[in-house]
Length: 243
Image (cartoon, rainbow, N blue to C red; front, top):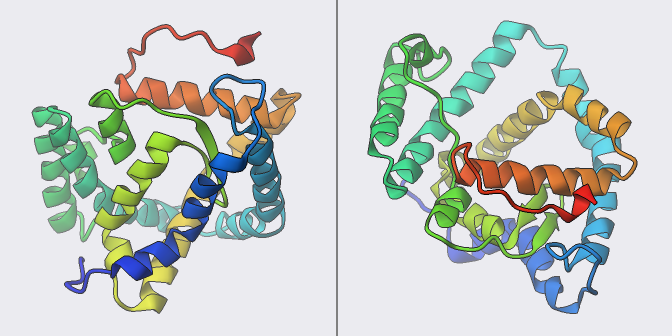
């Protein structure tokens, strides 16, 4: 539910301080060896910080959460997924994918009513496909270049374009619009923990498969986002990491 009291510019700036710091420091970062990662020294330092924070805080919390009953975790995922479908639908419309946008609206209507405020994903059972769109993808579909690769504190891999898109995503996020700080932080923490728990197997694979986890994650993210922007049919782009 969206609170009528929108966050002030000052409060949004405070919440986005880590993002602003990462972008501000780009001017003083040294050039790296990867043409799409000119900020590599700074990015590697941020990556190391994130790895430490994840090891001692985020991963342990996610592991505890993972012991919760499966129906509870599914309900949490469905609830936040239903909230996300609103902005996903808007981005599909902005990209000119009107059928998908209307489908997203139908998902919200069905899951918010029959699905008991999104706790049950009835829309998928009815054949309404779940999509994944954000403002970064929309900007990409409009021809905005991705810019340099950036690792954001706590949030991880991004690009300049996706970091700018993230600001719009947060402004449109109903969870971030709650005036009550305790409610907003609790919901945000639960959503973040749920997402982190869903990646517990994937991060183990990355640890075992990559000699350089930083390079592995960079290559994966850039290819993954390119695939998202072009809806699964990206142009062939040479990846220096393959060399």
